[in-house]
Image (cartoon, rainbow, N blue to C red):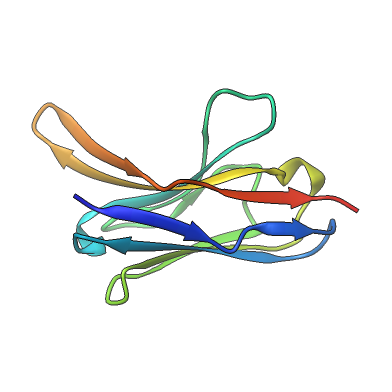
Amino acid sequence: QVQLVESGGGLVQPGGSLRLSCAASGSPLSIYTMGWYRRAPGNSARELIAASPTVGDTVYANSVKGRFAISRDNAKGMLYLQMNNLRTEDTAVYYCNARYPQIGGFSEYWGQGAQVTVSS
């Protein structure tokens, strides 16, 4: 079982940048497909915005493609989300997610969330 803790959220002006970090402990990060989700104000569902599989290419939601970059350092147990050219519609709580396949489905773990507010 892995524990996830996000950091790096805050208030930023439109056009600005932030980097979110997710520290993983309790289990090697390398075995998990890692992802960043967000939940915008007034929405009940989390939206997958970036994913880093154990093998293969990273994937991005169209809404963040070209502006956000997901990266991971398995040796350090860290996941990152570099967010550039932020827009007001990027305001949300951002969640780190770890997923591990199992027979019949998968195990899934979440961080506590980090608030990102984009406002002038």
